[in-house]
Image 1 (cartoon, one colour):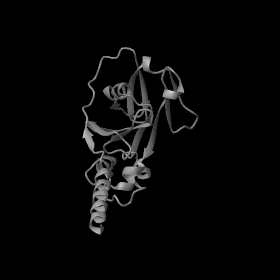
Image 2: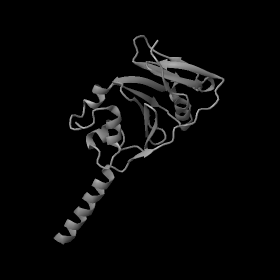
Image 3: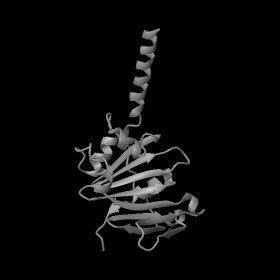
Image 4: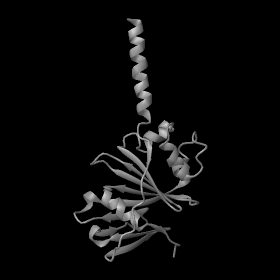
Length: 189
């Protein structure tokens, strides 16, 4: 009886450990640039986005707001928020990940075979159905793809920048492709 109990505990512990990092970082192809004659250019700090006008009902921001609200046709229930956070504010919460000195190293580590579990859970990767990365030059985009109905998080990292950009809300594959296909780094005016 005691041997059976030990075996069951070992199996349960094995499942717990194997599921702890079930969502691994997957490579994703950067969407190709498409013709977009009906696009609006939006610059947020060093990121320049060209978004189809048909996908944007309104662009909204509060005075002194930390970000931009994209309100697609259909209202705020499908809204997206683009905001910026310093690398230190995000990575600094996890001093045990001392080898991840850049935002790219940090998000890559969270999708590795041995992620730092507190950060893996807190950043939402534990609950994600997929965790993907697309890269183009100095831009690296991590999509923490949640189940339908849950908040999606897209983390945008620029090599050499101290800023992590987050697109949060009802990110659909169409929005993801629209944002990335024309995303570029632009000088701040």
